[in-house]
Length: 524
Image (cartoon, rainbow, N blue to C red; front, side):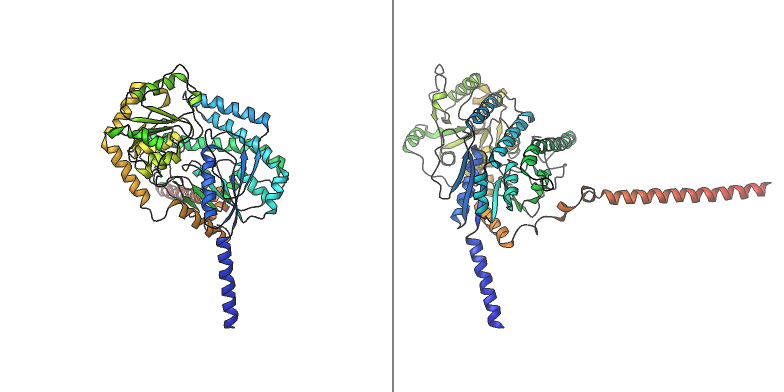
């Protein structure tokens, strides 16, 4: 009996060892830019920790101009968008880049992007050979970029449990079941902090209602995909797929995000791209050396935007940089610089930069950024203040958080003027409070008990080892909405109170009537 028990225990531990050190994981990314950089980093981390990783990647978007891909240690399954459609999509991106730099980003732009992602989803699901080969590999779990609803549908089509990764702040929190108290949790695109006055709380309520309207529109956009590729009777609902995720990871950290309630299956792993700085090239080191004690600033408007299509804005930025004593390393495609515009003498243009290494350089004084989460987390890690120029998406909210944390400030793109830009840069660099706040956040970030990659690996392995995350998800996800909000209880109590009040009134009326009639009889 004892020998049998020992053999069972031995087999159990062997299974756990093999499971933890040899899980088959499918990572999914159908967008370029920072989305690809993040999912690639996640894939590398999982691969380094002994897991068999394959990425399913949609190529052809061209959203990483100037980037030279590193050799991949894990296999990648790719497919490329049709050339005719790709031309249309790139025209859409080019058109909206122009709008971003003139301050005209809106929810219509976001919904138009979702319509393109829906079309691309149909193309992806039509890749029958690829879908079959992925199904035949029998992955244990999928790790998906949750910004694109298509990744949920692909996972569902493959019959895989999945872990959802959202590449920013808790923008979709109300739609994934997260408690969202509107009195101190600012909604996506509200640009509010957690300290709201009366009118700001009113705004927050309307933003909450608006977020549900937008979500319904997104679900309607993907209805055609679902109807075309899933049989009647087993057609998924995107809102249900959000709740079905075994885990939710967010590319954020409470060094920048405001404290808020979370559920056991929701974790933040922001800062995966932030690391100790490596030495920069000798060419850059020579350029930085010329800055003396003034140091240098890094300018990058994100992985997607390698140029500025609005020449008036470009002129103002160039003039503004010319007025500061610091050297400027600006990620900008040199071939797209206007021939008639003379580059400021203290500015160096580069097709691509190792941003983390530059921000981590001892002479880095400031990061001028669009406000992408990866850039901000790198600035926090290295304790470098920030000047933001938000363009679209979550960048406005990200920079509102940077301002609330007193680590920097931001200027709306339509208000960029040379003098104002130069004065703001000087103000941030010369005011020690910004650097002090940045260093304080850096200490908070670095002193956390577990690094982002450790949390990522441990939680993924926990889900694989325990056979899913059902033990972490609240029962509320299975309840009807009226039970979640206790509307049935409220209705029952209300009916009881009405009935009690009705009976009480009837009794009192009856008693008063009897007393009245008795009194009248005595008088007569």
